[in-house]
Image (cartoon, rainbow, N blue to C red):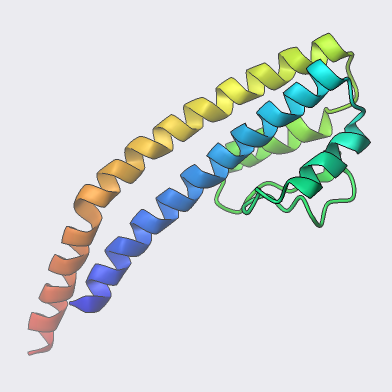
Length: 144
């Protein structure tokens, strides 16, 4: 029964980690947008600002040599990962106005993804531990 309950809780944890990775991406994109829009920093300087920030746990900023090569979190879906790679690989290739516009568009996309995952997380938190417990109980009964 305990293993079934653990499996249910693990599902909730995965959704939560996925949501947190999306929220961290959104936070980073806002920070990049601010650095470009208000401080007019080049992409290489923005990377140093992000690396000194120490607030990104899901995004491997510290190990990054170029912001354009930042890897998406493993929790992302294929579409989210594709969008993440495209978003970061595009940095520095447009004018300030074009970059800011694209970043706002990417932020909006990831906010929509985060909201969808938040709903899935809520549903999983409500039902997965219960289902896991029931499956565990049925498995225990089957072993009798």
